[in-house]
Image (cartoon, rainbow, N blue to C red; front, side, top):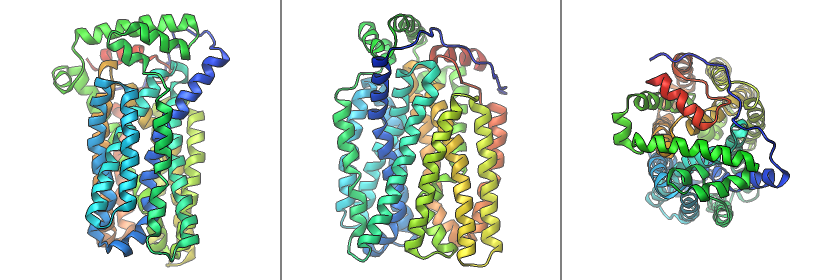
Amino acid sequence: MDVKDDATTAPPTTTDAPSGPVNRRLRVITLIATFGGLLFGYDTGVINGALPYMTDDLGLTPVTEGMVTSSLLLGAALGAVAGGRLSDARGRRRTILLLAVLFFVGALGCTLAPTTEAMIAARFLLGLAVGGASVTVPVYLAEVSPAERRGALVTRNELMIVSGQLLAFTCNAVIARVGGESDGVWRYMLVIATLPAVVLWFGMLVMPESPRWLASRGRSGEALAVLRQVRAEARARAELDEVSAQAVEDERERLGGWRDMRATPWLRRLMFVGFGIAIVQQLTGVNTIMYYGTQILTDAGLASDSALTANVANGVISVVATFVGIWLLGRVPRRPMLMTGLLGTTGALLLIGVFSLTLPEGAGRAFAVLAMTVTFLAFQQGAISPVTWLMLSEIFPTRMRAFGMGIAAVVLWLTNFAIGLVFPSLVSGVGVSATFFLFAVAGLFSLAFVKRYVPETKGRTLETLEAELRARFS
C-alpha cells in the first residue's frame, strides 16, 4: 500500500457566508467543548511538578514513580476505545457530560489519595476521562465545523490541551514557591483540576448534539436544527442532504464496529494508517518532556525550584506554537506540515543528546537543554500534534468515526504508556544522551512512514474525504 500526496483541495460544497449569530454560536460550542482539552492538558501536565513532592510524601521508587505517571496513560488507552464506542452509540454530547463527571471524581481522588496504591487507582480513573476526551472532543468539533474551518476549530482543542499544560506548570511553580516546604503541597496542585470539570459539565448541558451523529441515527430533523445554528440556511440544507446520503451508504455497508472493520479491506488499510499516525506522534518522545521536563532540567544542572520555573517556558512555547499551528493549518496541506514537524523534532532530540553528552554539568548545559526542549516543542505543538489529532478526527467514516479514532487513540495512549513507564529506567540505565538518540532514530522511521503512507485531507468535506479514501484504499 503506497499512498501518494494529493495537494489538490476541493472547495466546500456551499460557500455562503454565515451570519454573526451563527459564527458566535460556533465559537461558544468550540469554547465549551474544548474545556475537555483543557482538562486533558492540566491532568497530564500537573504530574510534572507534583511528582518530586509526591515522591517524598508517598515514598515512591523509580518503579512506582513510573507507575503513578503511566497509570493515567493506561487508563487513557481504555478510555479512548470505550469513549469512542459510547460516543458512537449514545452521542457525542452525552459522552462529554459523562467525561466531565469522571474528570471531577478522578481529580478529587488524586488530591485525597493517602497511599501510592490509591494514587495509581485515581490516576487510572482520571486516565479514562482523558482518553475519552482525546477522542470525543475532536470528533464532536470536526462534525460541527464547516469544511473550510474544520482545521482551525478542531485544533482549538489542541490549543486548550497545551494551555492546560501551561496552567499546570504555572500553578505548580507558584504553589511550590509559596508553600514548597508544606506537607502535601502537591495536593493543592492536583485539586485545581476539579474547577474546569465543573465548567465543562454545566456548559455541555446547553450545547447541541453533533448533527452528523443525529443524521447517522436517522434523526434528520434534529440534525437540520443543529446545522441551522452553525450554518447559513441554504448551506445547512445542502449539507444535510450530503450527510444523509453518506449515512445511508454507511448503513448499507454496516459500518459501525470492529467486526465490520475487519471485514472491509479499505477500512483495514485505513486503520493501519490511523495506527501509524498515532504511533508517530508519540515516538517523538513529547510526553517524556511534558511529564519529566522538570527532572530533565534538574539532571542537567538546575536547582529544583529553578527547574520548575524554567519548565514554564515549555508550556509557553507550546501555547504560542499551537497558535502558529492553527494559523498554518488554514494555509498549508496537512502532510507536508507533519513532515516538517518531524524534521524539527528529530533535530532537537539529536541535539539534546549531544549537549547532555558533551557539555559539563551546570547552568550552561541546563540552558542548552532547555533551548532544545523549547525548539522541540515548537515543532511538536506547532505541527505534529495539531495535525495528528485533526487527521484522526477526519479519516474515518461517520458511522464509526469515534470508534475508529478511539482504536487509533488506544494505540497512541499505549505507546505513550510504554514510553512513560520505561523512560525513568531507561535514563537510569543508559543515560540521557543515549535515550534521546534512540528517540531521534525513531523520528527517522516516522518520517519514512508519513512520506509513504499518509494521505492529504485538507479542504474536503468529511463526506467527500470519505469517498476519496474509500476509492484510494480499495
